[in-house]
Amino acid sequence: MKRLRAEFTYNTLVFILCTLVSGIVSMFILIPLGKLAPGQLARDLVSTTLIPLFFASVIASAVYLTLSLGSENARYAKIPYYAAFRKSIIFNFYMLAVWSVWLLLAKNDITRSRYYLIFVTVINIILISISLFVIENHSVRNFYKGKRATLVGVVTTEARAEKILAALKKDWTRKIVGVSLVDVDIPDSELEEGAMRFIDGIPVVADQDHYLEWIRTHAMDEIMMYVDGNHLYKLTEDMLEIESMGARILTGLPMLENYNAKLVELEGDPNAPVINHEVRYLSSIPLLCLTPGQPRIRYQIEKRLLDIVGGIVGCIITLILMIFIGIPIMIESPGSMFFKQDRVGKNGRIFKMYKFRSMYKDAEARKAELMEQNEMDGFMFKMTDDPRITKIGKFIRKTSIDEFPQFINVLKGDMSLVGTRPPTVDEYKQYSSYHKRRLSIKPGVTGLWQVSGRSDITDFEEIVRLDCEYIDNWSIGLDLKIILQTIGVLFSGEGAK
Image 1: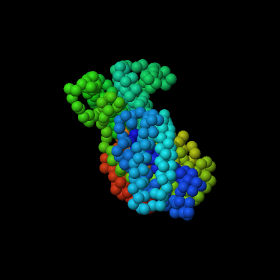
Image 2: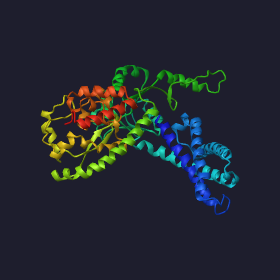
Image 3: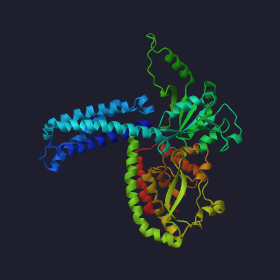
């Protein structure tokens, strides 16, 4: 799904932007030559050329992407230049057809200039071919290095490791974070950083006794369990525990692997059976995908758009607050007006979360000596009359003003407007497996916990229950309801400390 989203995005942008650039370049070439309605005003020229061209490119993009995007081969490997050229030819055929019909129905004067049609088409074919080739290659080389890559942990056997790693490396949207071998015992000294072994350039980070702990404590979106039939049966209970963490599991199907090998041998045989494969494939490896319930891509887009709009509004308010809050913060306790802290986000990713600073600069160092006075039952820290909080800090905490810089995190994509609260790294290290499920979505500035009592809830297990309830029942309507309830809670000050 991530491959499709990435391809859809860059194909759409390339098609539309390159078409507009081709239209503008053609205008600058043809107007001095007197081949493009030289007597028209500039505004009329734009309305009769670029606007129809823009709409034609949008419609042609939709048609092309609907009919052509998403084949397995296209998604798993970069396209050579001749393939980029072929995509450009097909798109421009659709675009030229739509554009011509548009101009004829509108009885547009530009239809008298065949030169413009020819110049735009030729320039566009060349420009799109080069752009797709460059962007595709850049994506294949660099996408897995970025924050949007799917983080994959591999659980396999020593004999199968090279095959599955080679197949995974063909998918440019995945980053392999490590491999665990469940059929060997590896000495602890060999697993230590700097002394570990590698398979196809990927570090072996755990064995059969340590791989569950590795999965629980590290950032991963998918767990690839690629073992033989005997090991798959033995790992059934472990798979249930991994599912409780909210991670997606891809597991190999040994029986289908043998069956698929036989089908390959029969290729070209007229008596060979015709089989429609319904199982997801990674190259030629059949896989069963066990995925926690996720909203449709349309709803994910709607949620991100809501985050962008809310993030922009929140950042504007944050800038205004900086004028009135920033100076008092720095006067009472010299230092930055912002507090930055490592927090744990979706599926264990670490990010910097921003707040207005409400404590003295040595607050983190003094936390250990105050742990005995922690009022939370579990892995979170809350304390009434915390001596580390400044006078201005008490005010901005009571009014929740200290939370506003988190809208920066929302715009960056680390957080969402609504979600689960991100734990600190120390809190995360103490999690049991099922606690990690609350991190299977992006953390939020607000959430079901905040509007259900906030600091009045002192049981961490109750917070986990509310977070999982939100995950299981998510909808745009629920997000809007929580946002409105949050605004009411902020004005009432209910539950804030």
